[in-house]
Length: 215
Image (cartoon, rainbow, N blue to C red):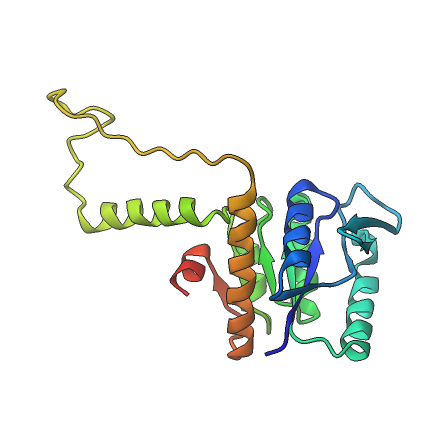
């Protein structure tokens, strides 16, 4: 498998910009010099990532992006091409339908939209996707551990609220994440994971961040 090319959707939004910079600085990935922007930007524009200019297509010109990706794939002999979506909640389903229609596997980090429809769209298509409302690996792992305890030991905490009924024990779980870097690093893991699934020929499957962490 050659270097994975990543197309960013959601620039110039904060999270999309952070992911774009991480991709640009990575030795594993190649950042395509074109991407999607949000519905509030109606004209063609561009944004600088590092020392590169990334051309942005508004949602009304998604097809133009597809045409450019096809051109770049042929001219630059690109390897696998994946989308990392941190766009607008209102664009989630339309973007996913676009990705699936034109055979572009994607990582959906954007929250909102019709999540059941999103899942159905992927499963009815020829592409696979990582769909996760939370990309921070530490938080996802903690959530999975809590779910495992609840399912495996259903009676262990039946007498607990935040304080046990006899007030002899307190129990709480907290997390405190400063900044967005854990979410960026989680997204990079998700992109790498999805690229391996695509190379293995997996189609029409929805993966979660739990799947990503399991490898």
